[in-house]
Image 1: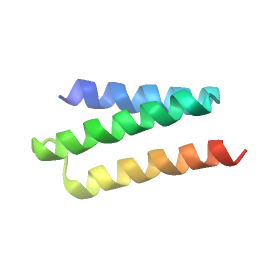
Image 2: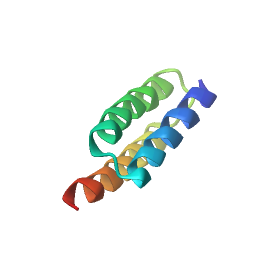
Image 3: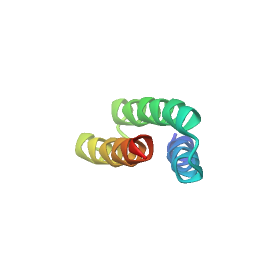
Image 4: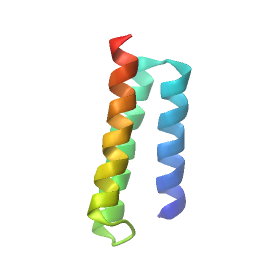
Length: 66
């Protein structure tokens, strides 16, 4: 579960930095889903998950405003 979490976040950040808006949005949504599942399984604390999701969405919003 930890590796899939890290992989999902890393892939989302890579797409955001590459500048592909549509693919980045889809990948961020799937990363948020994986983060939520990690909280349900007790791997992440809920506040840590909220912080990770917030940072991902902020970076995505910066990309879409350009």
